[in-house]
Image (cartoon, rainbow, N blue to C red):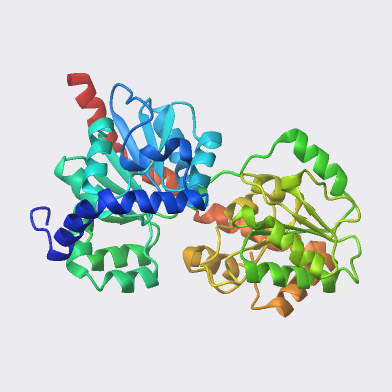
Amino acid sequence: MRDRMPLALRLYRLASKAAAATLAPRLLTWRLKRGKESPARLTERYGEASLPRPDGPLIWIHGASVGEMLAVIPLIERLRAKNFAVLMTSGTVTSAELAERRLPAGAMHQFIPLDAPQFVGRFLDHWRPNLALFVESDLWPNLIVDCSDRAIPLILVNGRVSERSFKRWQFLPRAIAALLGRFDLCLAQSNADAQRYGALGAQQIRSIGNLKLDVPAPPADPPTLSKLTGIVLTRNVVAAASTHASEENEIIAAHRRLREKYPTLLTIIAPRHPERGPGIAEAAKGAGLSVALRSRGDLPKADVDIFVADTLGELGLIYRLAPIVFMGGSLASRGGQNPIEAIRLGAAIVHGPHVWNFAEIYASLDAAHGAELVADEESLTRCLAGWLANPTAREAVADAAAATVEKLGGALDRTVTAIEPYLMQLKLEQQTS
């Protein structure tokens, strides 16, 4: 498998190498203008390191963005406890900001280079990783091929293949098989994911569970939490997390209907993209509601209907304020968001039907009556009204969710066990070098 490279893969490598000099600057300039790149760290996208490589074995972990990074932070903490140096790469500004706040001491972050052979080669020449862990499904061909050619062991952790991705990858079966066949080990989130990886050409596959079920509750700044808790203490609070445009309109409409019976109701909206905060505020004002924006330092005072939490890294704060949380991306067809952090902080979860990114988690929650599935504004309003009127019923849902998450956990321990032989090999090589 490693010696045979399908035509599609060879053409991709040739095209990406030829286009890098002209297209890469244009792409990065376009992304810079839209706030999707860090100006101070742009050279990292060309494979130029901004940090020195530490001595000794280095484990490189790559995940696309925030969700993948959150999933592997506990794993990184385990690796650091074993005294391994860890490099985390990702491709988004928000994930870089998260890395700065949440990575343990001794773990480093860099932006992943664009997937052109010259940039990848520069990156690997500097960092010389001894083990590479790719998270979920962000599989860049040149990175994989060049790691394999340099005999760097490759492991896919928390591997996931949605039905949509599975069908798409089947259009180039030899190319995806050639890439997956270069992985020494594929640790899948579920039996369904494992079966799809096998059908696509992966070799050593294990179904060990979802690392996102083992993530701890997100932190919150204690003074800020205390201040906001005091302000909203006597109010009914509902939150909508990681929302998209159409969902915010439905949340706003639900609030308008509910406030007739619950005049002290406060709805917190945390958009998936915080820069959309002012637009959400305008929509709420247009609906006749009073609004406060977190990014402007506003507070959710008694006369505020909608509190727009248009900041980064504060979901831990929001989940501690709201006993009811709507998970965004699920009424809009975006695949849903991870509900585990909110569940760990005692929230009752409501979600729409579009949750394919976390299909098994939501299926288990729904089956255990640990979440409520809604289809539209009408059913969303009805669900929220029921829980506002009956806190005991809401608490029963939250308790069922917590029990479900506890039962489904353990992927972190199984992941560490699965990669332990590779870690032992690195230690032996270090001792004999």
